[in-house]
Amino acid sequence: MEPRPTTDRYEAPRGGTAPHRSVPRSPFDVRAAWQRLQWFADPSLPLPPASVPRARVLYGLAQPLLGMRVLLRDRGLLGDALAPVVFVALVCLTIAAAITEDLEQGGATTELLGDLVLPWWLAFVISFFATFASVAPVPPLLFARHHARLAARARVLLGHSEQLPYLKGLRQSATETVVQTIVIALGIFPITLVLALVPMFGPLCAFVLQMAWTTHWMVVEALDSGRTLAPGDDADDALVRERAERFTPWFVRVVAAVQRSPWHKLLTPVRMVNEVTETLVRDWGPELRIVERERALCSGFGIGVLVVLAIPGINLLFRPALVVAATHLRAQLEREHAELETLASLEGEPAGAASLAAGPAGAPHAALHHRV
Image 1 (cartoon, rainbow, N blue to C red):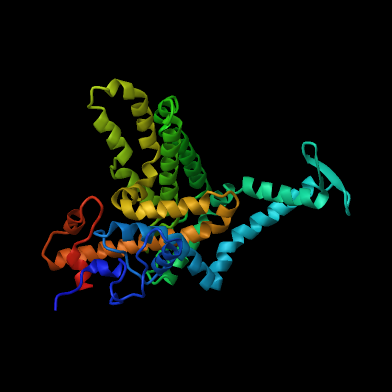
Image 2 (tube, helix red, strand yellow):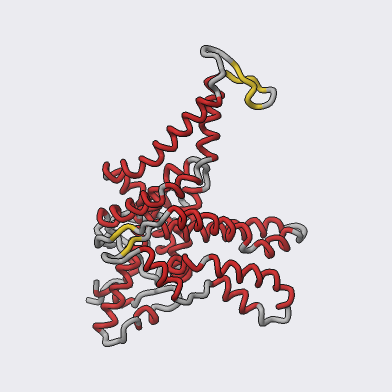
């Protein structure tokens, strides 16, 4: 009997014959979509084949949910994840108490918001949450090494091979934070500025483009937080190897292609900014390769990252879940690549040929999913 198409595992089952539990068909039903996300948020579920891009998008979208599930099921991992949150909360409580220390107990009031008079306890609550939201970007910098150890522990808990945490120094973490802020703010500024000056839909297009650019770098940062090192490797040595390996990001190639058009002189500001951006982002070569190669997977993951990190304050609480999600995603991609290499050796192809045969999106051979 001929094997069933591999997409049956990831599409809605027909007649209840799929090897997994029933997955709803309609993508427009909220309840059905939530059930589908829950189905994909299973650590034991392998990566969908690249021939089913919609399943790959949903798989990426479900990764933050998977990270939350893993944290809630393991007390040790949950304790490590909550430690930075508790520390920041205590600091914010101290700051809020200092702001309202001059208030009298039992009904004292303060003019915290202009002419609006508030009870002291309400002013304390507002001060706490305002402080918590304002310092939310700081903990990822301070706790980068803590999150790196969390990623290494989560990798083993998810059933993958044990690896070392990718420990960065405070200087490197601070530099990357500043660089990423500059790249997000100025990377496509000439383009968004021109679009914003266009009447009617220009400002809207500029906003959408800037949001997409920001989401792209949020995905890169999330993938970087889930990075681990092979046994015996060192973070400094890995960084030197990556800088020595030449890689041209996709946005640089796009501008270079447009430069050959008759309008190339108008793109001089964009080209100048691109050259600076290419120099600044050289430390994120592996993550940029993943985003470029796995477009469907990272598109879904990007939506999930945006939803989790868009709310100030709440993003600090869910960032450990993103670390676990990124760790799982990278480990699954490593496993898929290893399977492709194994298939290539069985078929007598030279090393690396399977990755090339997979195409620009990294699509594996269909035969692989029939054989494993």
